[in-house]
Length: 458
Ligand SMILES: Cc1cc2nc3c(=O)[nH]c(=O)nc-3n(C[C@H](O)[C@H](O)[C@H](O)COP(=O)(O)OP(=O)(O)OC[C@H]3O[C@@H](n4cnc5c(N)ncnc54)[C@H](O)[C@@H]3O)c2cc1C
Image 1 (cartoon, rainbow, N blue to C red):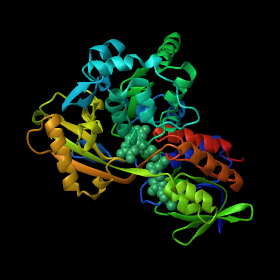
Image 2 (cartoon, rainbow, N blue to C red):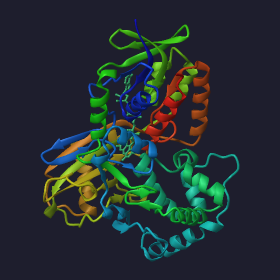
Image 3 (cartoon, helix red, strand yellow):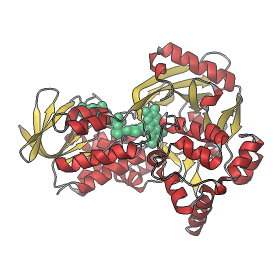
Image 4 (cartoon, rainbow, N blue to C red):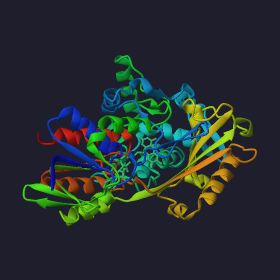
């Protein structure tokens, strides 16, 4: 049986960033990474088709996480970063069948038609809202309704939750999904007061509070698509990586671990980093700790499909002057929203053409996975046509399905994660990273992988 100091299981961004930080911080440790698939990247992928770049899953990250920027820099990719164009700060929300621009300043909010007058006035009452319930893991919806009212919860918050998590605001935990908002309320007693304080702090430091693509960061990808970072990791760390080899189980072997591979081989390792989805981690640790496996398996995922379509620009009736739009469930559409990729990044469609990335599914629509590709595309076209106006068929289409796409941090999630951490402590040198525990964004994955590597014994 061959031996190594560390085994990393999974070659998505979590596993790859763990490998990178391990080589950078603790190069004296020998390491091997096993990936079940015949490609690396997990949910990250980019297809180049006749002048289009179609991202399979994520299409960017916010440039606010120093560890992601450090990873990019150390991989020598900084000059290939591509920031979203300035008009990506125009975002739209569907209300009563029409796209309304999401306001980005308080005066714009007062004048906008995104909510009714009563809805807007209720938002202004935010500083006077009641405080949080004691000892309750409050849902995002309850929090939003309490602070800014039902209409804003339905039309501003719920679509954001489905856009990021593919989730339902009434099921997800505020503390686990949006810890910053939770903290803002705890520290300042009001979101408005917190925003004013943060804007002042940012101004004092000579910066800005946000940018296109999101609060506190600028949406960023790589020239030619997000997969560039995976390709680069593979080139740099090829000698440590074995693809097409799934880890079946991890068992104790005195003070080490035996990692059993699907091909019948076993490896002995002193430390193990599990960088796989939590339902896979559950299978892998079953023989090691059944309670840990049960806890990991209890984290549920929402299905999501990404329908990428290219259109001749002249066939699209609306000017695609922004990031895209979100569709609140109250609007009764099947799609969750659509991103106007070619308006955000360069070269995502050939000259004279545009690209839409439309999301369908989520925790409120598990049945969407039963639809055929043709049916999914049909739903997307019907909705886009009535919202944006499309004359005739698309030029290109690709459908990417994620049956267990996005982990759902439901109410009670932090308790599950604490219990997982407790079990891991008793096991010794098994560590977890990935999007199922502390945050689903690429930045969260990179940050968690860094933390895990930092904790490894030398
Ligand atoms: C549609 C969609 C859109 C998204 N958009 C964004 C976005 O715009 N911005 C953003 O920041 N985030 C986004 N996300 C979230 C982000 O993409 C993910 O959270 C992140 O990529 C997860 O990375 P990971 O490495 O933890 O997991 P994964 O990408 O799931 O990788 C896990 C890897 O482990 C491998 N594996 C599984 N089992 C085994 C085994 N037994 N042995 C060996 N290997 C195994 C898998 O094959 C896979 O390669 C999006 C997600 C989806 C689905």
